[in-house]
Length: 344
Image (cartoon, rainbow, N blue to C red; front, side, top):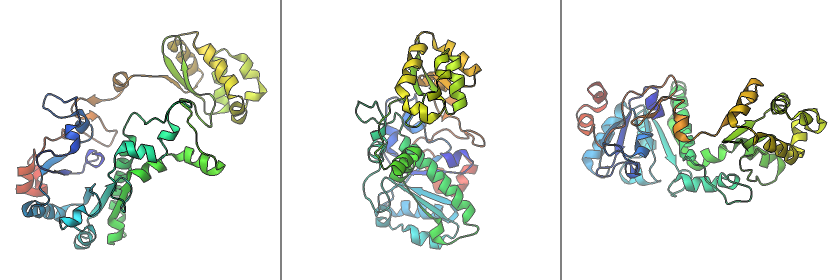
């Protein structure tokens, strides 16, 4: 979808009958029977249902490969080869083709890739949730999302690189959900690597910054995210906590980490005395990063979003076509190939 947003012509090859699994991941379904899950990531594509074990279906895919720039697949290892498609050979035959395989756990693993399992095994669940609670997954299938973004970045890099290094090996890409998710630990991973200590769950707090967490105002929760010594001084003055502003122990982040409970406790008691809007106004005037906890529908009011095509891409992306029904463009693709985009 990212490549389609950026202007690529994308043909989604699906199995007849059921199509993409996420077509059935509902409710909710829209009035046309499309699942919200499917709609969220399938705009700007044409759909062609193809039986990959059938000679006619295989012939269609081979015709499409002739003029394709990029193939993206997420089959388990060995599946394509059983159907007679060997990416290494096809890359030799088509010198401009880029082939990206997305897997759950790498090209040598036959484990299916599901976001929840990856979140468990990548370290995410171990660091998510309240300190005294159970491990918790993130509320979005974020491992899937990050792997998709990694794949899009890799494809774009390969498109540039093929002009300079056209060798097949440079055009063969492999992205795994597990690697993308583990790499996304970023500072948490580095904390563990540098300290040699296992990462912990911090709930809504931050392991390296204080105050950087959720606080309950009189009417709704808000977050305060202090990232510098100057911001801390501005924060406690905006909150009317002059004693903390004058406390030498709190002047540096290291000192604030050492006195986390004292600082957070004082801010917590102060914030609960007034509605969130009062504190947001004061903190924003002082230049302190802060915000209220918004439910999803409220958050969506700040962006362009559609029940059919989802949250609009940022520039230079554009929504050009709604998500397709299963095999909606199959006849056109079979007749016209890539030229089907000119007659849709």
